[in-house]
Image 1: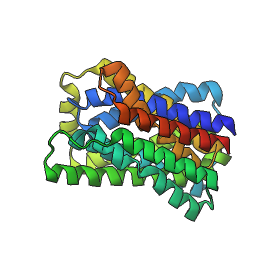
Image 2 (image 1 turned 30 degrees about the vertical axis):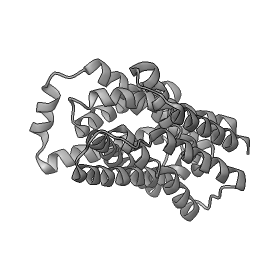
Image 3 (image 1 turned 135 degrees about the horizontal axis):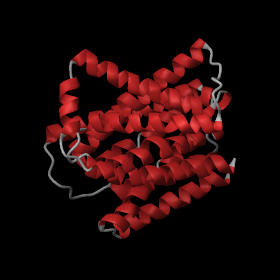
Length: 293
């Protein structure tokens, strides 16, 4: 299904642009508050989209389906995205990019256990090429100094984030295929936002959250990044998982790291060397193999 692959790659590109903007936003707005704002904006933006596409009729979900979608949002949006942004702030984009490469192996493993999916031989070769390209793009022998304790903390947040993302998307895979797509996307965000609000109330962090939101922030950047990450990229991301195997979509999603490097070169003037170009080439070759099967 060509459209599934196109959606998966497009989500990687849009998410890469959002990450570059989140990097700037994260310098002043803490990860939890940034994730909360991002998800609330996505929740609001999906309401008129639902009304235009689906109308006022609510779809019917079984109690099990509703539970899976809400918990998928709690784990994949509230927990995973917050931990991902924390890892990004603690140890930087390069190290976070390497850790986030575990997403595909996690999805492939969980999909094989719970969904019965299998990659064919050419797809495994494409997976190896994509992962090799991602590592070449993100690996640096000389990194900016980061405290060892911070690196360990960032790695734990990063691994936890990508595992929760993988669990969340595998949980919602069958509901995405059989139920209303946009309502499932919206309910995932409801699950994520509800979890974050419950956490704020339970931990008495409301005053701290309000104080951070009242501080001067680059709101234009935050709003645009949130629109891309929590609305546009999310719809494309889940559309890919709806149309093709989760294991294939997850590998194509890994190209977001290569897109980040390319966009950072174009938009931020960051250097791009021969090794990064080779990594981009390997990633592209892997994507072509994944899409040719």
